[in-house]
Length: 145
Length: 473
Image (cartoon, rainbow over all chains, first blue to last red; front, top):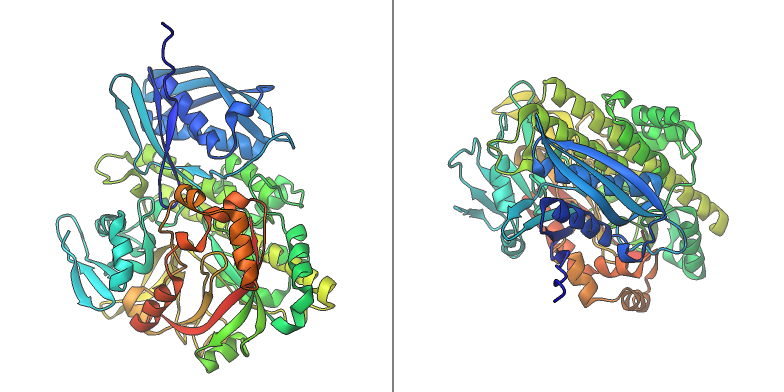
């Protein structure tokens, strides 16, 4: 029997901004899906062909800060390089002396007439941010729109 | 939570637990129902626990839940014992509003209204991912961060009189460009002179009703039908990055233990981290001032082109909605300098304050309160009473009550456009989904918000204005 495809993320209602939960069998997978959920508030990542790659490396004093900074990369690359995230590869999280570090290869495309934008995520917040482990991992994030 | 009614428009959370001061909520019973539905009151109580807070943690009538501090939250801190918090300013630093008056009446515009809006839409970049028309070098951007709207005027955007009719003369003097990260600069470079998206808009409006003749006259508002232009936007990605950077910096320096909410992270105002954030925030404030200055200039250009002149297109005022400022206030009978955080709140200095331009000093500062897209907006005047009531602050707008998600599910942008058209309001937008998100039903009743502000004395009603043309990012 083929394994069931796990739901990547769920967009949740939030009065002023954007909120989602992202899931994964591992913390890495949940973080990767959180990046796709962030992108999904701005464009349809599943339609983005990976023509360009960006390597990202971030550190955080704890997992929460690591997640906020990692998702911040999606916004930064979009605003400054017009990069649209389409997939996340090779995401690795490692503990280090003062916290954690994360590396990932982001695949995507440069914004052109081919793409449609429908939202603007401007910042990743700590509000209601949750990282939970229970039959895999679940992360919850609120972003400023 | 213990919430006591003081009078019809005033409620108090008495000092309890770790609160250093009580929290006061200025709201009608009806608006309080909305406020109670989210975490606004808990957030106001959390703010009351911060070191060095003076008098009260204040909540304005349009308040709703924010990050750390509520939106519509006002708190002032002692300069020596107190703190500064990026969460007390918000991510969109100096999100604000500029109002221009004109000598035109809505009738003068009549058949030119469509063209006027279409031309403004062409001239002012707006929407998600839309870059500015100006190619900037890093050096010039740093200059803008230091000089704000002054840079814009020096470079041909607008008039020097605009500066005196802008809070801080369009330039916060403590700004330091070298406190702004490379990342924030990179985000700021392509976006200068753009409206952005979300709740930001530009409206051609007309005066609907004048409540206070003397103040209206001082502000250049003459009679019903007079055409105005309102510009609502902020510091774009640059301001958001400054907030993000300094939240991280303060977390790394002071840790996150003991914070009821990580977005409440703060630094002593006089610590190196506190000073550095303040100087960086001032730089982002200046970016937003320059942004609105440029947009105002392009609007005047379009009026000149389409209507033959920009006659009488003076700036009424430009106010910040998200900012921390060092101001002089009275506490227990003594005049003290405090760092006042206004997050989703407008300064409302009353008559006599030296910070407001001479032409307004006898009536109080113009307070500009935008409604939601396509609904009425209001011009108020700052009051003397607001000093004691709220460190001279009042509301900043309508405040959301419905999620964007829910609004998109319920409304269609094209239908909203047609409905507005029937009411004589032209609408242009880069995104129908964005229009649906900003449906007026998703917001609180701004009429009720300003009524409370007026009755309490936070800001007194001067004029109601209504849109005739709306441009949304």
